[in-house]
Image: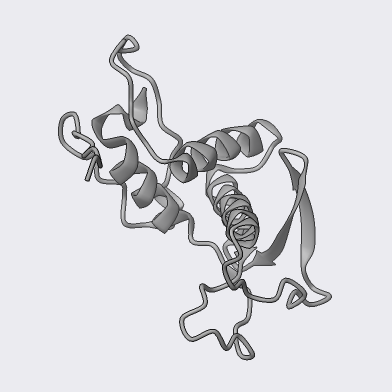
Length: 154
């Protein structure tokens, strides 16, 4: 069918299980000249997380905001393809907006700090009860580790 399978290089780095222990990747070895093949969402998420951190957010908030931004872009792509999308007006007055990569990312301060908000995926087409949820930085770190494999720290 022409589909290519991506080969993973090396073992997958397992992120910590505690959200407070999350740290940004560090480059401890010379950069490899071997290309990394990933989908656009993990690349955007990592890029946006690095930008958010440079803007002064901690790594956990940066991962969460980047995940929310990637979800916004994925919804926009889905809309352009004519796919059903959740309503975007479900954010309440407590929601803040954080400027990241030229977009207003919905966010909320939680007991664990600033978190980007995402809308749940549509399962049945009825989104009347779907409320925005804080994007998990732990899940984002795991997804990035899985996508980039052993190259995540480069």
